[in-house]
Image (cartoon, rainbow, N blue to C red; front, side, top):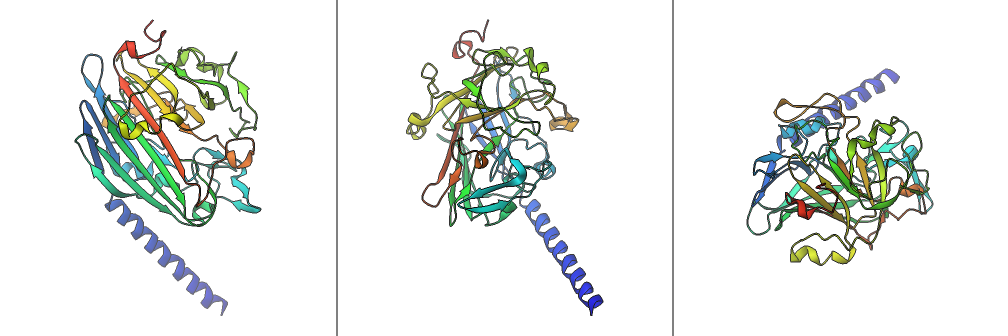
Length: 387
């Protein structure tokens, strides 16, 4: 009898493997790339992971270049371990111990970085097929809207969650990304992030150590040896994390040997009224909650990128663990080949009551707005960038 049950069990397992395999193949057959174009900007997005594939724009000489790291084939993103350009969730960044307690219920997640959960788990939102619900390639406001229904218990998270991500090109060379989520039946933590790897000199320009960065944050959230926040706040003053004034990325990066570079969450300052970002009327209604988070400049190309968001934090990451990654046009990416500037909630917020809450309920939906304004005008950068 025991042997008979074992045979049945093996048959069920094999059948499930075939079904799951065919489902994955079916999903891969549906992967597409969608293009948005406005003026000199051309954006490409794939429905796998709602991923930003490329952003082509001119440098100061008028020469077009792609400033986003990634792959030639959209199918290559299904095997990606770097999260190139992906929409990351249900909870981006790290959750310590792969667990949390919410409303008296203890939830155990799937760990995928040691004992911790990183970027939503082994199969987060970056590893699923999204549905395209709206698409306008060009015109006055090119945009694409994608949606995903995350089921109750996916990667251990509670409740059904309906998520949308909209990429939109506005005038003044601005890319907007609007991420929304609605809890359908249970409270749940949500922290969606766009994980683009930027190199303003072009994706195949090599390292970013000579690029200038300014981050409008007086504090950061220190971490332990596993990159989990301690729950404290520290001043950036007197540390390699101080980018309140524009700094060359490589000037102090070697002072961070444990992480081989920058990988830290900044607490964004609330008032940056001296810097403005121009957006369309549809986006201006969010102005009261948007703050400028960072500015990046590449002197050789003359490109400037301003980032503004309604989120409290910014993860600054210098592609420290990208090694021998074959990307577009056969170029091989190495550590420090890009800058990730991920607007976000604070990492491990579910386990730190003193951090801004990431809990979304049916009555309290989630909205994350981030804008990237591009320019080649040195006057558009703050003083110090062109010196």
